[in-house]
Image 1 (cartoon, rainbow, N blue to C red):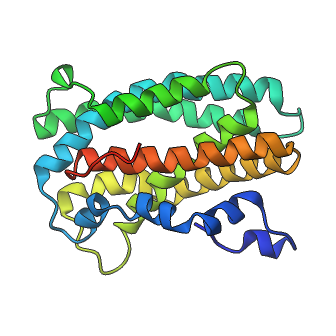
Image 2 (image 1 turned 180 degrees about the horizontal axis):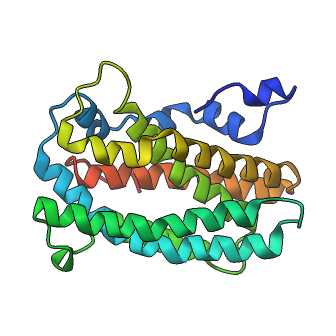
Image 3 (image 1 turned 30 degrees about the vertical axis):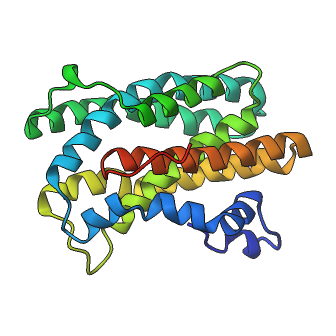
Amino acid sequence: MEGKRGEEMGKTLMTETWLRNHRLLYVGATRHPFIRSIRDGNIDLSSFKTWLGQDYVFVRSFVPFVASVLSKACKGSDNSSNDVEVILGGMAALNDEIAWFKKEASKWGVQLSDIVPQKANQNYCRFLESLMSPEVEYTVAITAFWAIEAVYQESFAHCLEDGTKTPPELQETCQRWGNEGFGQYCNALRKIADRQLEKASDDVITKAEVTFLRVLEHEVDFWNISHGGTSTL
């Protein structure tokens, strides 16, 4: 995820700096014990079912957040950028994602209508709601969007690397977020975030960095739901 694209351009981009400065927290989010248990093939499938139900609830709250980012992009990006197209593409994919969750829930015997969002899930959804406020700058919102998607992409891509023991029945789940196409989409979001950060004020940059860290903390807490961990928030 860190890569060297910033150095190749002769400068270090803001997201590159954050990923270096907050490496431990980022690794904690993308190499969480829940993810490692999938990768190592020793996951308790009841934990997977818990994640499946809770993430379905989260995605339904994620939709209006992405819609708010799209609205901010329409107002906050210039006409020469592809921000709107990139975000719109991500929003369209959420319809397929919700359908996928329903299909998987049926396969695994998870009753989605019975799912009660756990505290970490509720906290994360409230955090998303706070970012939907008109007062929240586009730069801050797109940073959060990128971070949320990037954590999932890198986490599940880790489960697809050579030598992993990911159970065959979870390969489709890992492919959904760990595939190369989704990785390219995350890179597109990251480029948008970096472009916005490059022209942002110091105050907005600080807000965006704090938001980035909050996303990582919420991601760790969300994984903890399925792995018996405790809240960091």
